[in-house]
Image 1 (tube, rainbow, N blue to C red):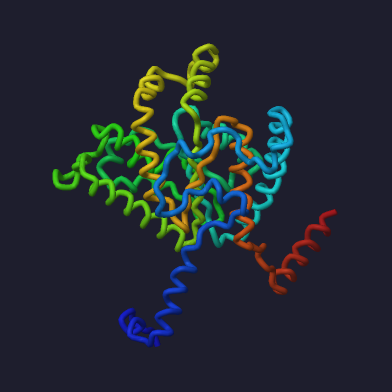
Image 2 (tube, helix red, strand yellow; image 1 turned 30 degrees about the horizontal axis):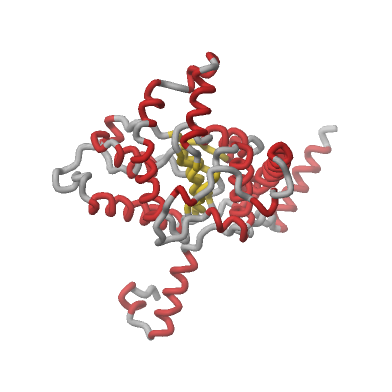
Length: 330
């Protein structure tokens, strides 16, 4: 007999408590090591990015090294984690119970592309997809703001990476309200705090829905200093082979640095949750940021306690028959 929702809610208090606990179990966030907690934005807390380090900050593990030794150690950790990630991704793909969504946000030159290239270099391309989101097209703007992101979500067994993401609609759009899609007047008043509260709530609900349906959501804000950004921009201007990676627009956006920082602080505070927390990654040292991201991803997948599919006796029998047929060809 199938119980209706109203029937279930009318059951005694003990069962209601059980259902409430079950609901909380469904939206647990990724498992991480203890030292990683200092990089997590605590849900419900105000965020001041100036309180987060932009340099490498895993002090206990690295304090006995100078910068060169620390870099070598971080590269060693990254290489180890890349091997572990390759194995973990194979298990994720074989188990097909969960999917993994990695969200990368940060100022221009923060290292999002490099993190993808280095951290995911050992992963089977068949089990991973990368989606980058630029200025929305006319068709994308004719839908709700989450539509284009929903179309790129990873299926079970897959890792999906968002290089910029649904958060652009509470960041770039907040700094530049003229980029907002056409909405009814009563819904599109970007000067209203209510408008942004609605969007934050939509994002939290979106991610809660994903987690409840088997997607592990890992969100990384690559925290770079303004001085380091200038250094990286100048490196591109001084190298003709990197001209393709830069435009005058990148320099123009620096004028809005404080506005973006404020938008990020408000976004991080409003959307870091127990089930989909934000990690603020010190990004002035690329090697440290990549090592940290890799370690978080490996820990998150290993925390799922995945298993390779069990092969039944009947399946084994058929495999042995196929093996004999193959051997008979010799």
